[in-house]
Image 1 (cartoon, one colour):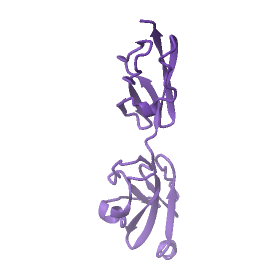
Image 2 (cartoon, one colour):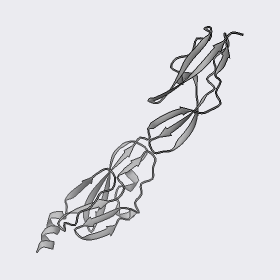
Image 3 (spheres, one colour):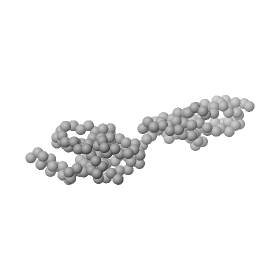
Length: 179
């Protein structure tokens, strides 16, 4: 009777699992959960192989043909995405979060010019190393539009140059000398 009651409740119902990280499923035999990766970054590939649908004490490995909206999940934009899984005529939903791969740090790469002669044109010859939330790094050539304070090259002395990239900043000092 209990299995029949469970099936009656589950058929046509849509259940929802939402979490950040990996969902831990309990061993209560009257509910379900989906276990797998719940946090992705923009343009990551959705990993179906690690999804497990747990219904009571039964575990089902989710396959791509069980995901009814696989071709509609947009991994190129940040936000909450719902994966619709169908198993034995019952629809289950699994929520993932796609996050922007934001910049966590910028730093100067060695090899930039620090000494100029008065009147010489300032050239932003620096390169910054950008570190992103996902852990990957990239080198970016500094442009004039990234510098928040172009130094006055007619004034002898030290000048601080501040580079802004996305929402991060770093600075370095140049020295303007007399001829």
